Length: 93
Length: 233
Image (cartoon, rainbow over all chains, first blue to last red; front, side):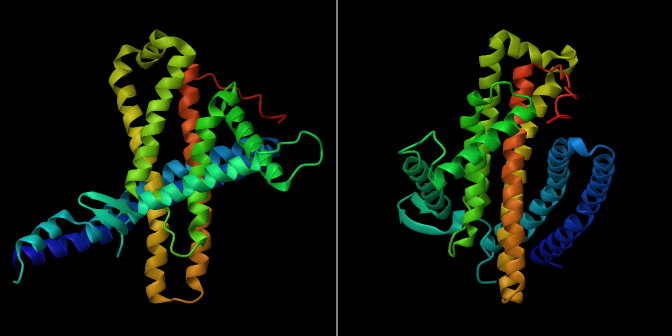
């Protein structure tokens, strides 16, 4: 297998695996966060605005982990420097 | 497949490029500035006021309340910066209903610029509140060993702000573009509504996180939680 095929295979497989494995953790974390927020809302409805605001901030922090994985995956698919380097190097092959 | 509005070139002369990010940012700046000027031309303090003034008052008092809830004691000092952050990102995301428009926050340049503004604003407000020596001393709290970690946390917070906003906006537009090639009829509308929702949430998150960082810098790094304040709110 030549270089181009190897880079292509590695990029595609890694992109898929990155986003697949990278969304498991944040999804579980967000589920736990929302569950705890709901139970504390049931215990103290007066603090609803504070709980909701803190919940959203926490969810955004957890979500950003999944966003990092998504960005890496997008870079591998659309802005892959190794692939671009090979493509530029091999015109007319 | 376009990764960001950087690749839409409207005009080019040598190495000066007018790409989509710049043009849409200028458009947003124009809309926000001219709109605000037009609305605040004849402000009235009695009960009879124009509906645009009402809308602006709702927005401004809402942002002020949020800033005060985060723990910043004089929200009027910070509402210029934080309110502008929120309004810019929110309107940038709302305008996606206009066809042909790509949000400029979908480009890493814009979000990095906004995150750098926050990076500069936090020491600025911290020094203004605590003095230069007091602010620099807060980096060595709780012990001097934490000094490199505090510095690293400043930089990583900035990076996280930029990448979070960029990732959310870019993924919204990219999902829409991909769906338009697969199922062009009803499903993209649902996804575009979801994109609007995440745009609003991300605008709120960006400005609230900036407010929390500024509050941490102006209060000093001993975080004294004030738990009983909000129960009666």
